[in-house]
Length: 99
Image (cartoon, rainbow, N blue to C red; front, side, top):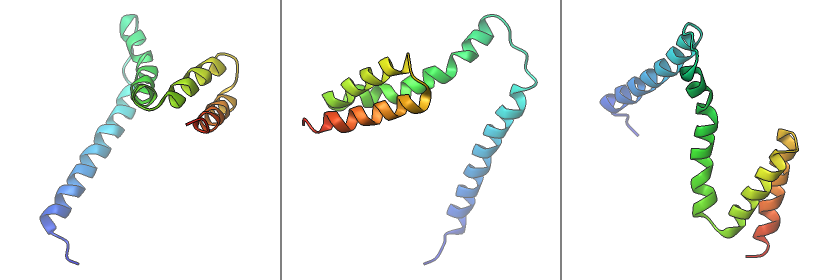
């Protein structure tokens, strides 16, 4: 098996650029002071990303996953994170038995 030097260089360059953009955000976040609407917008990013990742799975799969997501969301209002994850996994496993 031979490795194409141009392909290897492209992969390494993409890895370096990806790493640099991630590490730059880490260092820049400590130096930027946000207030007001900008702070609220930045605080809303993690839940928005989480919803963007989970929503397609919940809505594009079967009814079992949709019901399990609703059960998990209800459990999240009362239980700690680890227990909520357990409830979600148990709900999916139990509901998939009915398919």
